[in-house]
Image 1 (spheres, rainbow, N blue to C red):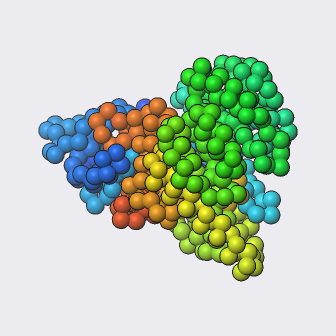
Image 2 (image 1 turned 45 degrees about the horizontal axis):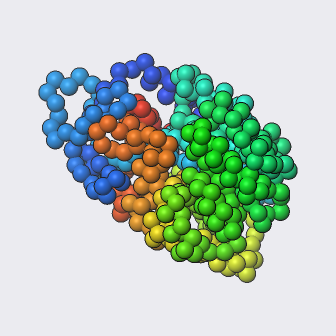
Image 3 (image 1 turned 45 degrees about the vertical axis):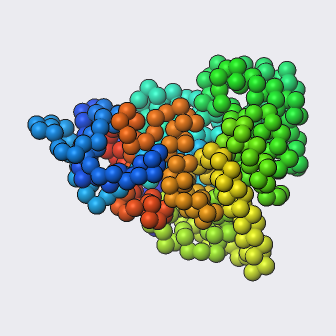
Length: 432
């Protein structure tokens, strides 16, 4: 079991290792591959040719006089890189107000070692996130690709302000337009908005919500709206946001609302694990027996869950609530709503890196297929971010090589042999 310090030291070592690949030639052939294509829901066999950071072709024979690197992946399974589309990348939190902070740099490196090739941070320290992203884009910091909202747009004293981190507030349509105009100068990858009518903290008005979404559209920036209730969802759908994040905590999503989401092209990041995994971490030996969790979870965080005791009645209550979330996700899927994976890591009930893999497990537990779960974290994510994520010619060479088939068992995404990131070979956590 690794301590917090030893994990952090591993991140620093990992940063040095992956940065060293930048100077190497990027011509790579993965031979004898089982190539899992979420786009077509097919598995094909062949040799995957990568040039620079792009997939060049799937070949049936090894080219003569090939001078690049060859890796035989016979018996392995190749999927597109996974994408964490809702995280707060500072560290981990656990019950009892236990927390550890290791920062965005370490988090991006950690995620890459477990097959997560990009992340979307949806609120943290705006200046730090801006600087981190710039350093990464300039090639000075390695790790999973960082996308970020930079800030969180909320009402005065609304959600996000309680964390002691400076954020942007707006209390009228005019302020919404001005705030987004100013934020747009920093080129956020998305605009995050908080709209929670029935919550304890103040929220923006419906008019301000509409103005903010329209202002973001004028700047050609997609919007992600944090909600709490079914009523919140209804307003956000009508305002034509791009994405809703979180499932309603008060009641189940109805088929009519799911249909309206699909018709208005509003996608969903359900963050199932942030709502359902706390009870699983407490009542099941996941953090003790799962290899990925054992690698990622410090003694401090693990013990915080082990030391919690829940009465059987409380466990039953939480499990019933979890079932509501699963039914809501199934309803969204049945209506054809575009689903995206994000764990809301950084909060209690989540673990940076591990929780994205748990989100895939939760998708399947809710009744979706392994293919649908993979699509949410790969090809759907690419479409949302404006990137070509996949395993076909012209797609970015962000790939995960697995020891076993994720279609037979979605939890096999946790068995990461190694990672390809922009055409470079990255060791996985299993090699540590």
